View 1 (cartoon, rainbow, N blue to C red):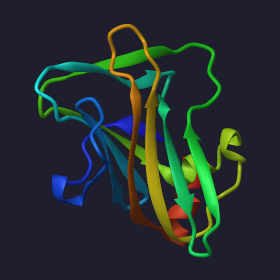
View 2: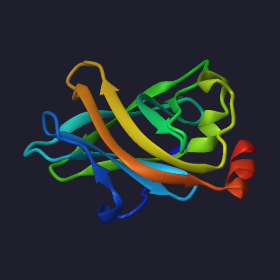
View 3: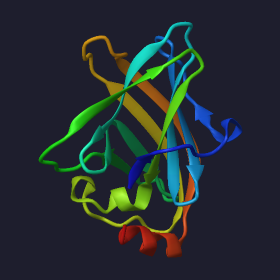
Length: 161
């Protein structure tokens, strides 16, 4: 439901403001959104990418959705786990990493209230909050909003993921 991988092109990514040489990007892509971390500084940096727990979980990322009626909803991208390991990434200047997130599937998880998302158009923003862990980059980044649409056929398919 979250996985590492390339999504979208640079032209489709909504980039937030850089903080200490890193910026967060967000891009809608069908039933998913892409989350990006990019090094816009001049030196290689280490960032917290994700947690491997039998699946990719994005502990440091949050999605904020607002439906057409203006109702907000926040999605956390982590779940219960027995074993896990933190995955860090080295980003050279200009380098980036990306994650793909199946939004409707994450909305249906218990940590997010277990409620399906209704089909429709949403404004989606993202946040990345990384605590200090050794020499890794730490801080808070934001990106968006972007418009993202969930159609009824996607909702049913994602709920089964």
